[in-house]
Image (cartoon, rainbow, N blue to C red; front, side):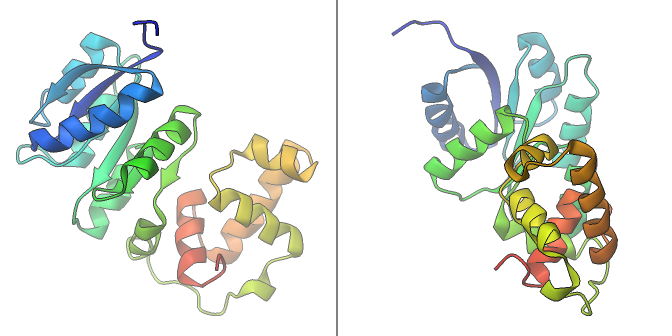
Length: 213
């Protein structure tokens, strides 16, 4: 097996065993874990110095997760950022997404799910764990209880289902054999009906309303 790795990663968590576990998941996926940190503050600098493709964040005593994500994304070559969310406030989940975190997963997820989440993030998908979607709803304001499955057209429900699977707009268009502008129109209608500003809000509200099963 070649010693060359396809990607570089920075792994950060205040627990050494957690960092070790994350590294063990990343290495078979072709990552060189170029740096580790037990604190949050050095992470953006480490990501820049190593030209990391991915930063995996756990929990830290020194800096809010959202602030670390913000600093990473302000770099000239921003890495993708996957956050292992500990017990946290709803407002922080919203902030993490607003600063363009690429993935939010629960801190205690199984290793195989972590690997799948990493693969999806590296493909350019936005990953939000189903367990966190309902929590995100609380950061978005009240849900319109008048909306139900019958409020969405058959095509809109198909688009929503593909959205929940993490598909990009282009992938949705390909799956449904429609144009990209058509997908964007369907999404605009879905957002309007659900009272959402973006796909994560739409998914959160859809989960809360039982539209995704």
